[in-house]
Length: 227
Image 1: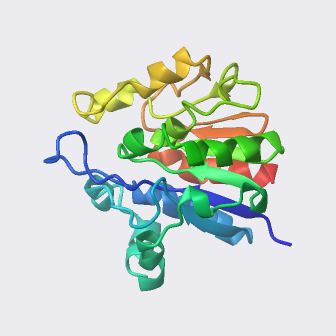
Image 2: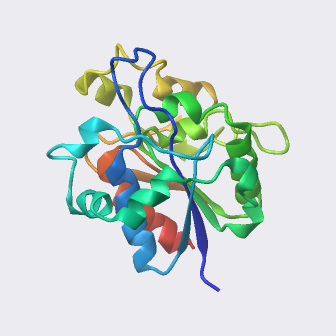
């Protein structure tokens, strides 16, 4: 029976300021999806509210818009998947061997406080499944607690989009909080690459995290190797 992975995507389409659109950073899904597909994993898409997934406009421009992202957008069946994602209530976590949180600044708004996603993540993790994220996807782990009440990321080596990268991307004034700082406040042993925007991943047991959009492929490969 093939291994099954749950890919988590956002429902949010803009920052607090509605004049600034955001959404799923498409390549963070497509790079990982391609790796998982190559290795025969069954994949499902879930979002905090279910339904449609907006796309981050900046991810659809050079140099972020690569062949996997273009292929996805040119495939009506793939685009339909982003119009009809499942909600957490429709997911039985025991059906899945791993969960992968995609990013884009939008996830900073709807990932952290989704009790449904927290329930799924806790179940997969405590059964020994793989919990993974890339870029801002780690916002989905910030408030997830284990059955003993401790934060899942407490005492764990991990990474995610760095504050330095927020500043370099010129969105530090738009984002609702400093995700790197919040991870540290929850006891995470946060790490980052010496150079911004290069691929960088961290594995600590069954927790796999990637720092930025360029880390999606490597993060997925690490997930596959653990599975």
